[in-house]
Length: 497
Image 1 (cartoon, rainbow, N blue to C red):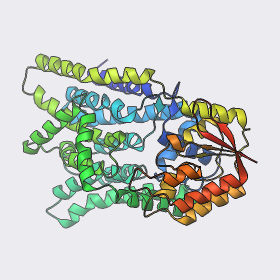
Image 2 (cartoon, rainbow, N blue to C red):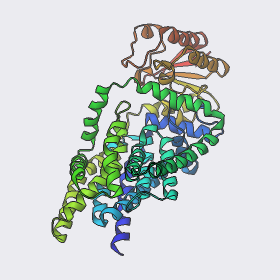
Image 3 (cartoon, rainbow, N blue to C red):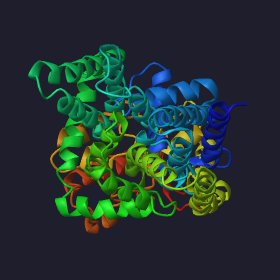
Image 4 (spheres, rainbow, N blue to C red):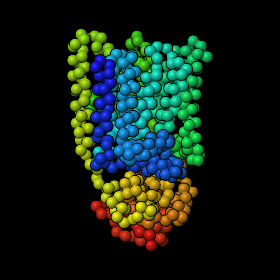
């Protein structure tokens, strides 16, 4: 087998191995994945996102998860994730090979792949973050860059299609596309008409992606705009500049165990002074600071920094090419091989731990309780943010507020009318059981008067109005009776009278 195809097999194999710790066997969905999977399942049953579940992600993550669930349940979602990572790895390898050569592309690809587990996975949980799904779109856009100059009209439109898909995962994932547009404007700066041609073609492609999505979720389009756009704009205002700046070193720390952060920053500083300006390198140089800024628009969770990997991988490949040009061929190969082994040590140890880790068992215990004490047709409300228990038990919620804090407590977004809607849902479709998971949930007050009266939100952007909480408690007390708690978990249980 020739070097090129052999390296393709190596890259694809590494991508599959990287995904092993996220296989659902022995794992429960993470908090985010639980919401995404539940929403996707409801979509498969005929109710589109935003109407079936209030959630603030754009629709593509639900569509991808729905494809996986239709194939083979949560294992099918994992297969979709494997396909996404393999596609991203191969697209990136092809793009970097064309610009920097096979050996440098291999190094750059492995450098970013070994950084994935620390950013994308969690102990004992199956994750499905939107940033992860964006990787093949990011690398696909890089692959479509020409060897010199600007992309053709056809390529630019496809780049735009991929950018629209990334937007449909999360609007802050557009760093690569902003960098491509900036590069095109720079290349065509001699003429305003030439400068704007490529950005307009990219915009056409993006508009096509958005039009397809709007058609698929047409009945819920208004709610989609409200939840996925308006809510996120409100949410972003609570992230001060100081926290965003602090988040950047945290992201660099998380990419440090493999050495990727040091290599990428060093290559970026070196590349600013390099004479070469291939489109791939130029876009990588522009994209890195953009990605650093965009990834901190929210809280700076570990998975936000997945968006950095394409630009970092390109810069790592560039650094490798520069190193190989300065030392003898055999010595360079040995040096790169040793460096890649060293870069893989910490990620390999982390992957081994993740592959054997188990979660705290609370979601599994709650799901087992629901399976034992309810029928599949019974409705169940989990008060808090543990939709994964509902998903595992295969029980539906009586309301689209399957978790409550974001919609009902975010300052500047939450309204009494939303609480009215929740109570109307519970009145119209009363659940058989209500599980109060507030003690193990994010910023959720308990369903008892004494506890709620002294409860205070630990997060400034979430403010539960006591009068709204008391209305919910009054409804529960008037129609439900305490029925013990979930064994091994301690969540209070309320059973309909």
